Image (cartoon, rainbow, N blue to C red; front, side):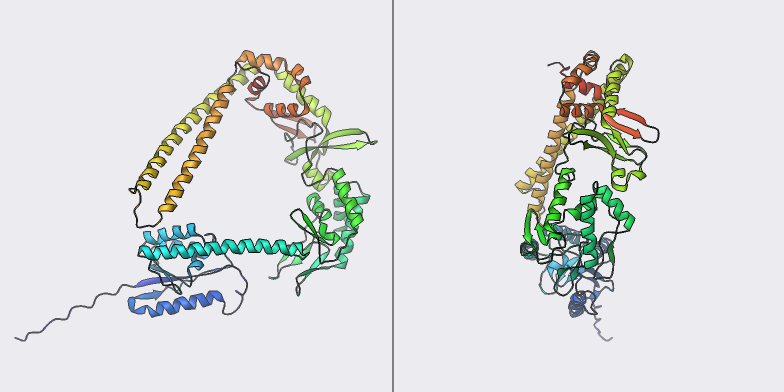
Length: 526
């Protein structure tokens, strides 16, 4: 018999499926036949071919994010990659540089946890790392910290560049405005003569007319829209009809005087003015006199006690207080439909309501319900029922928050003592920060619950106290300031619906309004 030695079978080589991820922060240059994403992928493919002896194979799917920041994970290709990892289709992720995957330390840590959970390796072509040991993780985290620092520095430099650009009077980009075009050669605003003449006409219309809506109506009649322009990609933007807000922004734009604005600073601009400074200033004075100052001066200084409560039924929008003066001294107050203000009087049947008759009617209805004993009793019963129900909900929520806090504090003690960390993830500081944030959130929620419970206890009143308070409503009302009357209406009334088609008024009262009135007038016991 011949003595033959049997050769052992060669070990089965495991195939490592490699996915190449590429990213670029901006879309600039991506239209080229061979762009930076292709260059990143080519480097990854070459690296994978060099590891073919280890069983590495490149997956055909492309995970390219062009024009997406690395500061967050809101990227379509990255989401698709993470989904394929969790589906078990990927064994290794290959990138050109670490910051292509992420520039956020927190996001990177989350991704590494996912990689560890699904046994997926991570390789950077230009930076040799082994994510299987703690030293490799440390170096990765250090590099990513610098990547995040670099991203924040770039953001600060960008903001500083915009500020310096504006202070030098240069146009810093954004949407072009009516009256100007953007010179593609030197990136400056140049006057569009046809549009500039329109802008000057609009300014004169406002000066000669009766307000913003008068000018809006004239713009609609002429068919003059806002600025229409074409982007670098050939897409059309703008060209919408003017409304009250867009017209106000045009009339208050200091660029038409040849200047530029940076926050609260005004600087001389490089572009030419198309509106005389005197005309522009007269328009600003008239705008301020008419109360349209962008919201800064829109205060309830004329005692509109139903502000924020009245709604237009046909238009489904709010009815806001306004006023007009006649003869230089007599002031007339109204509540005007916002839709009618923006789109014109012909669009709304409600239009405007004289303020005094409406307010007197609502006050009379409040006084009337106080004389209805059955209504007071039923309202108080429902209010107390709601209060008890809410107290029960808050008590249960308080117990839950206390248990949650005890659990978080226990986990924190274990982590600090060294028994709560697994040591392999290298994310001890991240877990500590997460627990501290959860504790702070729960403590804040617990404080809010305690405050509301205390307020509910203070609002407990008897039927006798409510009847006494509502019975004295008219005498109390006469002593209140306009601000106090407005606050009282908000306590009592939830909503007022006005239908201009038939002049009907519907008042919706808060269920707890009467008890609030009793508390406001000192009806509660000390």
